[in-house]
Image 1 (cartoon, rainbow, N blue to C red):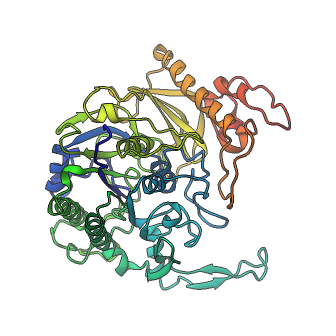
Image 2 (cartoon, rainbow, N blue to C red):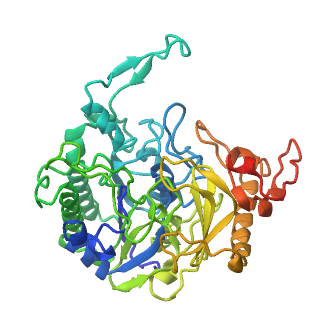
Image 3 (spheres, helix red, strand yellow):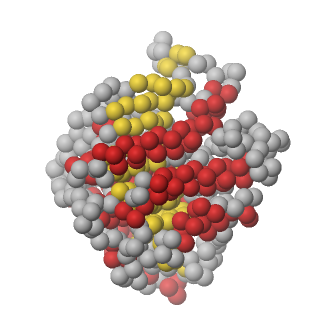
Length: 518
């Protein structure tokens, strides 16, 4: 996308755990119980990416999108469970901060999952003028639906003595720049059902105010559906009479349409970049409804189309999600591409399209995709993608090829390093079931070069460890111990001679060493 003489508005839809095959333009829609005409029309008016790649978990995916950096760099490689300072350190620069510096009005409503502290690690501290957010995940809604949830402090004697461990429902916060946060609700089943409608209403109000003020805007919409429990809005519960999943597809389609209609009403659709995507692949937790409407949301498990696997793995069903990009008159309408794109690329591309500055004082992994997304180039320019699952470099994609370094088929299954990388051709074998093996071992050379180059950047700029408090200052280059930060599996033979610290020389490793996988 070329930089416009007029700064474009940006509206970024970021759905939660929506699988590749759910909406009509990706093979779902009526196949899943309900058509999605507004989303399909958005795809027809823009670019539809078939090979858009995200991180395997919620927190790292949101971190990658907002910072343009692989989460292994920022200490956000995994969903935090409990204890310590969670989320991004204040040293990180988000797209909202960079756009705010470029004169944008910035707003966010929905799921944050990048810091529980509402005063020091809220969306407002990371560049948003205003925000309403859940600090963590919708999983915690289920706590409020259990009679046996303590809803207060508990102890863990004798190991933790009399320490009081708080167990309370998740709050919903609201905050504006220059103010303190306010708890406006408890994230319970009632609020969960209504949250996405509220997100839509707040965004529509914000866009109108930004337009009246004559400011370009960045609207970040991390919607909460279809995360467990996927409870539809009361207006949509039972509406399709085909179950809650079809109700949710109808709801998502309508809410998408309301945002797009607002752009038309305000007369700014032609000046607005719209991105519509999801943070992760489909949920693997199978649950069938025994009634409709179902207070727990009915069906839980999602659909990844032709791809195998679900989130929290490195299979394509986890890392590949739908992505639609519309910019009228600039991004070619109706373009469909299987070129590799990663969510970190959205950071760089959108900042440059907006005339904003990409940070030059840290490692940025996102590429400038403007020539590709404008239709000036058929190829994206991205050859390789590193697929992390937590601290494990679990797979590497290079063009149509993919090598798995670890075996992990499901979110909760045991993972183990392969003795040799398992190589697949995703065009021949979309479900990653048949290894192509030794005749194509030449592919590993390009993959190893990508890993080697990435490891060198970690030596130059050591990763931030998860749980690092603020203030954070980067350590000196060369202080990385790879064993503490990243697990590489069988591909270790290509990269371990890189690693040393200021304190000691690490031994050179060769061959296939299990300790790097565990």
